[in-house]
Figure 1: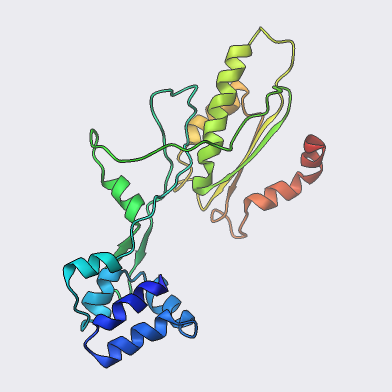
Figure 2: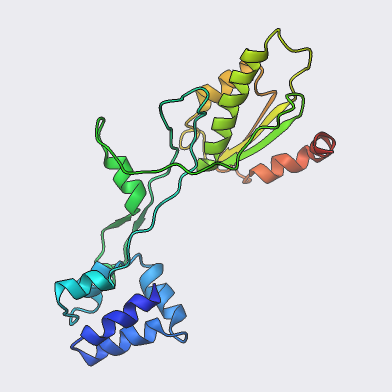
Length: 242
Protein backbone atom coordinates (compact mmCIF):
# COMPACT_ATOMS: atom_id res chain seq x y z
CA UNK A 1 0.00 0.00 0.00
CA UNK A 2 1.18 3.51 -0.76
CA UNK A 3 0.44 4.57 2.81
CA UNK A 4 3.16 2.16 4.02
CA UNK A 5 5.76 4.10 2.04
CA UNK A 6 4.70 7.32 3.74
CA UNK A 7 5.15 5.68 7.13
CA UNK A 8 8.64 4.51 6.15
CA UNK A 9 9.77 7.88 4.80
CA UNK A 10 10.69 9.48 8.20
CA UNK A 11 13.20 6.67 8.79
CA UNK A 12 15.10 7.35 5.55
CA UNK A 13 18.43 9.05 6.31
CA UNK A 14 19.03 9.91 2.69
CA UNK A 15 17.02 12.84 1.29
CA UNK A 16 16.68 11.16 -2.10
CA UNK A 17 15.20 8.03 -0.53
CA UNK A 18 12.88 10.09 1.66
CA UNK A 19 11.59 12.15 -1.25
CA UNK A 20 11.14 9.02 -3.39
CA UNK A 21 9.05 7.32 -0.71
CA UNK A 22 6.90 10.41 -0.15
CA UNK A 23 6.47 10.93 -3.89
CA UNK A 24 5.31 7.37 -4.54
CA UNK A 25 2.93 7.55 -1.56
CA UNK A 26 1.22 10.66 -2.97
CA UNK A 27 -1.60 10.87 -5.50
CA UNK A 28 0.81 12.36 -8.03
CA UNK A 29 3.13 9.37 -7.66
CA UNK A 30 0.47 6.73 -8.19
CA UNK A 31 1.76 5.74 -11.64
CA UNK A 32 5.36 5.58 -10.41
CA UNK A 33 4.27 3.43 -7.44
CA UNK A 34 2.54 0.99 -9.76
CA UNK A 35 5.55 0.78 -12.07
CA UNK A 36 8.31 0.53 -9.46
CA UNK A 37 6.53 -1.34 -6.67
CA UNK A 38 3.43 -3.21 -7.82
CA UNK A 39 4.41 -4.25 -11.36
CA UNK A 40 8.00 -4.94 -10.27
CA UNK A 41 6.78 -7.20 -7.43
CA UNK A 42 8.74 -5.22 -4.85
CA UNK A 43 7.86 -6.02 -1.25
CA UNK A 44 8.59 -4.02 1.87
CA UNK A 45 11.73 -6.08 2.54
CA UNK A 46 12.98 -5.23 -0.97
CA UNK A 47 12.30 -1.53 -0.33
CA UNK A 48 14.50 -1.31 2.76
CA UNK A 49 17.15 -3.74 1.52
CA UNK A 50 17.49 -2.70 -2.12
CA UNK A 51 15.42 0.25 -3.24
CA UNK A 52 15.88 2.66 -0.31
CA UNK A 53 18.85 1.34 1.63
CA UNK A 54 19.10 4.38 3.91
CA UNK A 55 15.88 3.42 5.73
CA UNK A 56 16.76 2.54 9.32
CA UNK A 57 14.26 2.13 12.12
CA UNK A 58 13.93 0.14 15.35
CA UNK A 59 12.66 -3.40 14.83
CA UNK A 60 9.49 -2.76 16.81
CA UNK A 61 8.72 0.26 14.61
CA UNK A 62 9.35 -1.79 11.47
CA UNK A 63 6.84 -4.38 12.65
CA UNK A 64 4.26 -1.62 13.09
CA UNK A 65 4.89 -0.38 9.56
CA UNK A 66 4.73 -3.81 7.95
CA UNK A 67 1.25 -4.52 6.57
CA UNK A 68 -0.47 -7.51 8.10
CA UNK A 69 -1.03 -10.52 5.90
CA UNK A 70 -4.60 -10.70 4.68
CA UNK A 71 -6.44 -14.03 4.39
CA UNK A 72 -6.37 -15.60 0.94
CA UNK A 73 -9.73 -16.98 -0.08
CA UNK A 74 -10.02 -20.05 -2.30
CA UNK A 75 -13.19 -21.65 -3.57
CA UNK A 76 -13.49 -25.22 -2.31
CA UNK A 77 -13.30 -27.56 -5.29
CA UNK A 78 -14.93 -30.59 -3.70
CA UNK A 79 -18.42 -31.54 -2.58
CA UNK A 80 -19.06 -31.93 1.16
CA UNK A 81 -21.55 -34.65 0.22
CA UNK A 82 -18.93 -36.72 -1.57
CA UNK A 83 -15.98 -35.72 0.65
CA UNK A 84 -17.46 -34.88 4.08
CA UNK A 85 -14.14 -34.98 5.98
CA UNK A 86 -11.75 -33.36 3.49
CA UNK A 87 -11.48 -30.11 1.53
CA UNK A 88 -9.98 -29.89 -1.97
CA UNK A 89 -8.42 -26.68 -3.29
CA UNK A 90 -7.51 -25.92 -6.89
CA UNK A 91 -4.87 -23.22 -7.23
CA UNK A 92 -2.16 -21.93 -9.51
CA UNK A 93 1.17 -21.03 -7.92
CA UNK A 94 1.81 -17.36 -8.66
CA UNK A 95 5.34 -16.85 -9.97
CA UNK A 96 6.81 -13.89 -11.82
CA UNK A 97 10.31 -12.48 -12.39
CA UNK A 98 11.35 -9.62 -10.13
CA UNK A 99 13.01 -6.58 -11.66
CA UNK A 100 16.69 -6.21 -10.81
CA UNK A 101 16.45 -2.44 -10.39
CA UNK A 102 13.96 -2.65 -7.56
CA UNK A 103 13.39 -6.14 -6.34
CA UNK A 104 16.95 -7.39 -6.65
CA UNK A 105 16.07 -9.89 -9.37
CA UNK A 106 15.06 -13.48 -8.77
CA UNK A 107 11.51 -14.84 -8.77
CA UNK A 108 8.48 -13.46 -7.00
CA UNK A 109 6.26 -16.21 -5.57
CA UNK A 110 2.75 -15.68 -4.26
CA UNK A 111 2.76 -15.79 -0.46
CA UNK A 112 -0.15 -18.17 0.02
CA UNK A 113 0.05 -20.25 -3.17
CA UNK A 114 3.80 -20.64 -2.70
CA UNK A 115 3.37 -21.69 0.93
CA UNK A 116 0.71 -24.25 0.08
CA UNK A 117 2.80 -25.68 -2.76
CA UNK A 118 5.71 -26.30 -0.37
CA UNK A 119 3.67 -28.17 2.24
CA UNK A 120 4.47 -31.82 2.72
CA UNK A 121 2.01 -34.60 3.46
CA UNK A 122 1.11 -34.51 7.15
CA UNK A 123 1.89 -30.83 7.67
CA UNK A 124 -0.85 -28.48 8.79
CA UNK A 125 -2.15 -25.12 7.61
CA UNK A 126 -4.39 -22.62 9.35
CA UNK A 127 -7.66 -22.00 7.59
CA UNK A 128 -11.38 -21.45 7.99
CA UNK A 129 -14.49 -22.17 5.96
CA UNK A 130 -17.03 -19.57 4.92
CA UNK A 131 -20.59 -20.13 3.74
CA UNK A 132 -20.67 -20.80 0.01
CA UNK A 133 -22.90 -18.98 -2.44
CA UNK A 134 -22.77 -21.83 -4.98
CA UNK A 135 -25.92 -23.93 -4.92
CA UNK A 136 -27.51 -26.39 -7.29
CA UNK A 137 -31.18 -25.74 -8.10
CA UNK A 138 -33.50 -27.81 -5.91
CA UNK A 139 -35.47 -28.90 -8.97
CA UNK A 140 -33.40 -31.70 -10.51
CA UNK A 141 -35.00 -31.17 -13.92
CA UNK A 142 -33.50 -27.70 -14.29
CA UNK A 143 -30.45 -27.38 -16.58
CA UNK A 144 -27.11 -26.37 -15.07
CA UNK A 145 -24.74 -24.38 -17.28
CA UNK A 146 -21.23 -23.90 -15.90
CA UNK A 147 -18.20 -21.90 -17.00
CA UNK A 148 -14.78 -22.76 -15.59
CA UNK A 149 -11.71 -21.21 -17.24
CA UNK A 150 -8.39 -22.24 -15.66
CA UNK A 151 -8.58 -22.54 -11.87
CA UNK A 152 -12.12 -21.20 -12.18
CA UNK A 153 -13.05 -24.85 -12.59
CA UNK A 154 -12.91 -25.20 -8.78
CA UNK A 155 -16.57 -24.52 -7.87
CA UNK A 156 -17.76 -26.30 -11.00
CA UNK A 157 -15.92 -29.44 -9.95
CA UNK A 158 -17.68 -29.30 -6.58
CA UNK A 159 -21.05 -28.85 -8.26
CA UNK A 160 -20.38 -31.74 -10.64
CA UNK A 161 -19.55 -34.02 -7.72
CA UNK A 162 -22.81 -32.98 -6.10
CA UNK A 163 -24.74 -33.54 -9.32
CA UNK A 164 -23.20 -36.98 -9.76
CA UNK A 165 -24.08 -37.96 -6.18
CA UNK A 166 -27.61 -36.66 -6.63
CA UNK A 167 -28.10 -38.64 -9.84
CA UNK A 168 -26.97 -41.83 -8.13
CA UNK A 169 -29.18 -41.10 -5.12
CA UNK A 170 -32.25 -40.47 -7.28
CA UNK A 171 -31.58 -43.26 -9.76
CA UNK A 172 -34.76 -45.26 -10.10
CA UNK A 173 -36.51 -43.37 -7.29
CA UNK A 174 -37.63 -40.26 -9.17
CA UNK A 175 -39.93 -39.94 -12.15
CA UNK A 176 -38.39 -36.60 -13.06
CA UNK A 177 -35.64 -36.47 -15.64
CA UNK A 178 -32.43 -34.74 -14.63
CA UNK A 179 -31.77 -31.49 -16.42
CA UNK A 180 -28.84 -30.98 -18.75
CA UNK A 181 -25.40 -30.54 -17.23
CA UNK A 182 -23.25 -28.35 -19.48
CA UNK A 183 -19.67 -27.26 -18.82
CA UNK A 184 -17.54 -24.82 -20.78
CA UNK A 185 -13.88 -25.13 -19.80
CA UNK A 186 -10.90 -23.28 -21.20
CA UNK A 187 -7.15 -22.95 -20.69
CA UNK A 188 -4.06 -22.42 -22.84
CA UNK A 189 -3.43 -26.07 -23.63
CA UNK A 190 -4.67 -29.45 -22.45
CA UNK A 191 -1.14 -30.36 -21.32
CA UNK A 192 -1.01 -27.48 -18.81
CA UNK A 193 -4.23 -26.83 -16.88
CA UNK A 194 -6.61 -29.56 -18.00
CA UNK A 195 -5.86 -31.25 -14.69
CA UNK A 196 -9.31 -32.77 -14.16
CA UNK A 197 -9.56 -34.37 -17.58
CA UNK A 198 -10.22 -37.88 -16.28
CA UNK A 199 -12.92 -36.68 -13.88
CA UNK A 200 -14.69 -34.53 -16.44
CA UNK A 201 -14.69 -37.27 -19.03
CA UNK A 202 -16.04 -39.71 -16.41
CA UNK A 203 -18.86 -37.26 -15.60
CA UNK A 204 -19.63 -37.15 -19.30
CA UNK A 205 -19.70 -40.94 -19.63
CA UNK A 206 -22.02 -41.41 -16.63
CA UNK A 207 -24.39 -38.70 -17.85
CA UNK A 208 -23.80 -36.05 -15.21
CA UNK A 209 -22.34 -33.91 -18.00
CA UNK A 210 -24.52 -33.97 -21.08
CA UNK A 211 -22.17 -31.55 -22.85
CA UNK A 212 -18.48 -30.81 -22.31
CA UNK A 213 -17.15 -27.91 -24.38
CA UNK A 214 -13.38 -27.33 -24.37
CA UNK A 215 -11.42 -24.28 -25.50
CA UNK A 216 -7.63 -24.62 -25.60
CA UNK A 217 -6.62 -21.16 -26.77
CA UNK A 218 -3.02 -21.94 -27.79
CA UNK A 219 -3.50 -25.25 -29.58
CA UNK A 220 -4.33 -23.69 -32.94
CA UNK A 221 -3.29 -20.68 -34.96
CA UNK A 222 -6.43 -18.70 -34.15
CA UNK A 223 -7.04 -18.31 -30.42
CA UNK A 224 -10.27 -19.84 -29.19
CA UNK A 225 -11.81 -18.93 -25.86
CA UNK A 226 -14.84 -20.09 -23.90
CA UNK A 227 -16.88 -17.10 -25.08
CA UNK A 228 -16.35 -18.19 -28.68
CA UNK A 229 -17.78 -21.64 -27.96
CA UNK A 230 -20.68 -20.10 -26.10
CA UNK A 231 -21.45 -17.75 -28.99
CA UNK A 232 -21.71 -20.72 -31.35
CA UNK A 233 -24.36 -22.26 -29.09
CA UNK A 234 -26.10 -19.01 -28.24
CA UNK A 235 -29.58 -20.07 -29.37
CA UNK A 236 -29.44 -23.31 -27.43
CA UNK A 237 -28.19 -21.51 -24.29
CA UNK A 238 -30.98 -18.94 -24.60
CA UNK A 239 -33.61 -21.69 -24.74
CA UNK A 240 -32.17 -23.44 -21.69
CA UNK A 241 -32.21 -20.38 -19.45
CA UNK A 242 -35.65 -19.12 -20.47
